[in-house]
Image 1 (cartoon, rainbow, N blue to C red):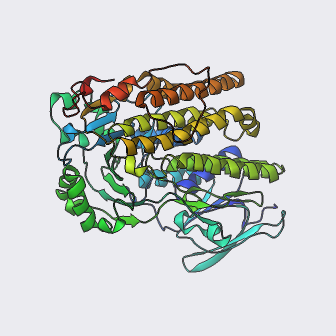
Image 2 (cartoon, rainbow, N blue to C red):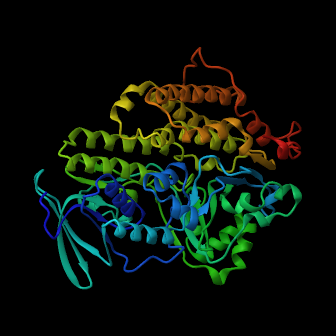
Length: 551
């Protein structure tokens, strides 16, 4: 498209995390590209900005630090993360030391971070402008006119300081969040099968889970740089979880997420109700907040937050990214991962188009791949919230979910194969089998939970000493040739296969979805320590005496 004063290669509707990171990624791939970011917020964001997505996991951490080159800022201005950490219920949840804990005692080999969204997005704006990307703040998009032909530009009109401006755009990226400007215009809304609600708020103070206990056993291995405070902490119960996330600005992010059939949103959808709900279900957490009522910074409730779209990428030169497209669930912190996937697919399409290449096939295939990743991840959450308080099922499920994440989606992204269509075709057997195993295992977890009541146990399951978990996480950073990548992909599938049957055999229940066992599957004991630590004693009444030493 010929450039005029008001013409751009890419116009991004929204200047939050998704829109700004896409602009950086496109600029990195196509330095001459003219990019305009329209952000409705006037001025810079406050620190501890009122947005979800503060906890990053491996894909997003790698995307921000390495793909976008933001490592220096993240290392110096954000917090390192001691992984995800989970506490399962004990009695009335008034003493965290009595709860079963699942988490590491050292930083995972592949890093992740806690991101203060206000601080991070302000830095992204500065970075964009430093690279010649135009960022207009206080811009409210008033209309979007889509091109009628493959050569004509789109037109975007927006208002800024009382004046209306119109620009032409080769590509439009909708990063407008739940306003979903393009999704609504093109009637692409689609309901999600997953139903859950959430409320969240920030407290302008450090709330440190590590100080909730004081025994030598509790503090052992969790002091200084390995304090539990650095983790994304999850307080788990039947049908719910509560998050506590530290922010570099000094605030603490707190959220309640729950299944509406077990914990209706009406029971915690205001600050007063949320505190009352916490007093009932998480009294130790409630006390910490009540001491800081005057420091609560904000509060928001969101009903049925999971959402889909009929289409997210088009060869007609548009794409939906971030929450403007699809969103699953905050458990395991995958939101920024999908920003990384969506931006990588879309920036590839933009680059191909500006090089004069056709996107008819690639846009269709990337759209299908993105939705496949989304729905493949969705089985982890759909109908699974009733399991969340189960001491026996959930530690195994969490470890299984990690393994699927690291051997499939993370594996593809870390090794730069996300957009290689031929790679997917070559590895159809592995992709298909891992998907079958995961779907069957998620159904098995429900069967296990329904057939055997959870028995409370206490202790600490040290993930840092579960060899399979530690090594699979570490291996994400390996540099592989194409042949080595394929060989390891095959091995990843075999590992998941062996782990699947180890879980089935150890629990001793039939799989709800029939699945044939391959003769080549080796018997393993990858998760023996997890089973040991999360199982009740033989008497069934005493706290498992070896739980603290397990793993």
